[in-house]
Length: 374
Image (cartoon, rainbow, N blue to C red; front, side, top):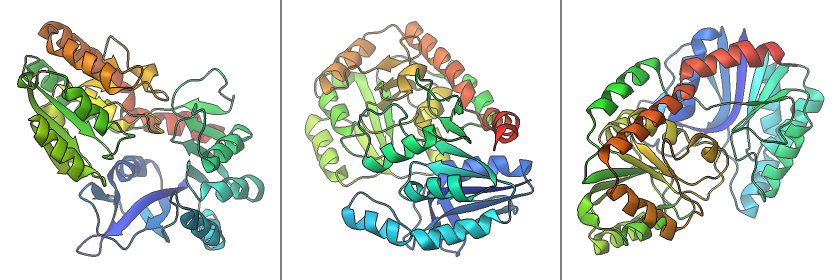
């Protein structure tokens, strides 16, 4: 069986001219590839330098099909997305002629016109993945339109979380991020981990206020930092220098790593007791939460989208409402919590992460989604 995946995943050429792409998506395809004769990945090729989080394809049956970069939040970028629509549709149409089934990953700028095109003009079997916040009350117009079109589909749609108004053709799906080998290692890491002060914390994601970085810094300003060994910030953003300056002023021992390869991120998980993500951004279910839990990082997160369906008091802390004041109270509670209780939360978190393996994801794609595609 041949599969086309259509996405806005960023791709680049490395120093040797080899195609690499955004790590989490590339990993997903690398583990899916052995189950297909051929996978075509139609996605965007950027002319800029590849970040360290990028990965190469490891199977020869994956073929990258380049699209010009498009998308963004400005009015000009949205016009550019529409301007490129004929070329994008042409590339997608030619690729679909080579395959048996497709997946379109949404929400994305080009999803505004690709969902109608595939719905009305494509007879191939296929399904849609909505990776954003399915329950978002006031999404951007483009996201709202895509979500509406997906509710009216006859084809299957995979979404984050379980919702009361969930359409019959939608499937609650966990995004894969862990191998069975990493699962086996994770429980050993947790059993050997010390949940005694001073603690180490990590944040993984885009460095901005919506993701919660400012809330994190403001919350640590209210706690006894002598009980904090280190706060690791992994990712990048325009306000990084401002965040660094604030941490220095507070006397908070913080390291800003920028983008890191997957293995180096995992090494930080292995050495931290907590993962911070007090986000108010439009999340689905961030993979970093499952990754961190697998290695014993107790999540301290917001309840946005489906996050609160997986993270409870038994396996973590939910910052509700998502403010620096509430986060500060949680941090104070943690710093005085018995190590055995923290270890139990970590073990419960490890159990929750079992749904986020590539093997579990592949099994559901092959046995539930593809047999029911239209």
